[in-house]
Image (tube, rainbow, N blue to C red; front, side):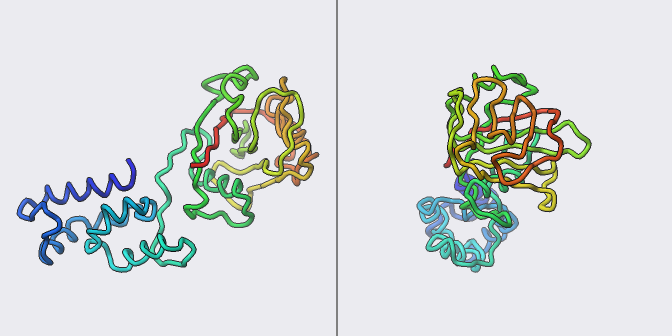
Length: 268
């Protein structure tokens, strides 16, 4: 459900819980407002008001702003005026779900942060989560060979490849291709690609981000099993060789795959 739907249904529920209070919100008196505040106050922290579009907010929430904590209502209005203004109210993470057996939402926040080309500490700001990650392929479901990849991942635009290694450390490696896989059998040039390594439980001390150094060899759009990120991460050859990217993401030259997934990355 959209956040505004959750709010609207909460109000409908509160009206049903208080049959002695008028359903005409515009004529509520101070006593009725207090009754409603007590009814819904425990749910207010769970509604992501900052993610409601401003038009919906001012049409559906603002007329009932008396039901909100004063500081929260002030911060929401400030945020809509200028999202860069510091506020003290907590901004909860968006209700984004990822259809993955390998990664969790913390990984998605980190990847979105990298896509936006911002180095350093990851951010949970709404600006860094303006992407949909749509599952195209899962190895354990669709097959681990090149043919399923061609069928499901060609001509889909930007994609992220996630590979769970078959090792005791629960490592995950992968790469982001901002271009198009198409089997052109040529190197594709981009400054936007990167490869990475992290644990199944994300930990900044074990996370490796490796951006492209030689942009002309960023993506090898091979029509055979050499397809991958330069020579540094070959998906089907299952090799990592330190060549075109800034860092080597795993120590062994070769790796074994437990499962892998490919997601289409769309900016919302």
